[in-house]
Every structure is written in C-alpha cells, then in structure tokens.
Image (tube, rainbow, N blue to C red; front, side):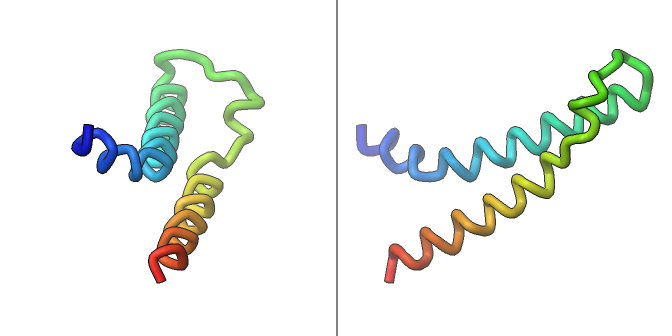
Length: 66
C-alpha cells in the first residue's frame, strides 16, 4: 500500500502530461488525414493550459513542503 500511496502523489502532474500528449497525437493524426477532429477540439489550446496547471501544481507543492 505504501508503494501505491507514493505513486499517487504524482497523479495530477501525470494526468496533465498524458492529456497534453494525447491532444498533440490527435492533432498530428488530424493533420495527416487519418481522421477528422471536430473544429471545437482543434480550437482548444490544451498544451498551454496543461503547462500552466503543471507550473501551478509544482509551485503549490513546493510551498506545502516549506
């Protein structure tokens, strides 16, 4: 249980990175013509939002350690 507890503390950061990577893969697949992504999906800026949230999480976690 201790191993699982240690890994769960990085879950927010990991989920943001996975969402950003998945968004980029979908955009690449759309550009290659593999499938057509909806226009509302293409207008979102997921990587920038994920980066902002990731930076905020890191700042909040560093403040909590002090």
